[in-house]
Length: 150
Ligand SMILES: Nc1ncnc2c1ncn2[C@@H]1O[C@H](COP(=O)(O)OP(=O)(O)OP(=O)(O)O)[C@@H](O)[C@H]1O
Ligand SMILES: [Mg+2]
Picture 1: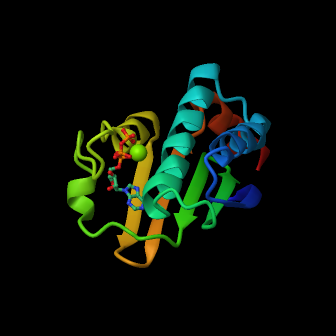
Picture 2: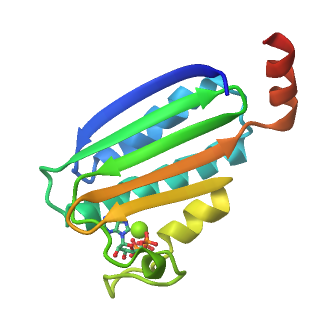
Picture 3: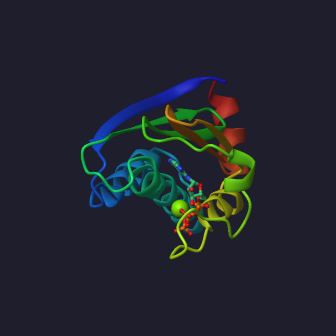
């Protein structure tokens, strides 16, 4: 997989940084001609993962550090969101639709991430933190063009 571009963004676990992360990724992705609905889906998935890091990982405390890495490969955009927060003790359960540790929430964040992205991988350990990898495959015609250029 040929590396085309990469950015890293580190920010505090303040709720207003959800939109910062979303705008940064959308701007980074403009190098690729994703269609508007793909771009919208990427933004929602990033918002869900970053919100989870802030709300659950750091339990709303604004002093945690969230790390976002976006990498553009020849055929895909990969986004990794990491926190060093409380982690997820039962990951299989947390990934189930409608499951939330907060009764006020819908438990649909991972469901959105999975339905909007081509690949979602989650690593987590209680007390250590959580890392979410989101992958969106580039539109087919762009992949062909990139191959021709390389
Ligand atoms: N970064 C994280 N750190 C710790 N726990 C997490 C993290 N991300 C998710 N979780 C756990 O996984 C559960 C499911 O997450 P998901 O995003 O699907 O639902 P939710 O955040 O509870 O609700 P919604 O996203 O619909 O507001 C959360 O309730 C939480 O317990
Ligand atoms: Mg969520």
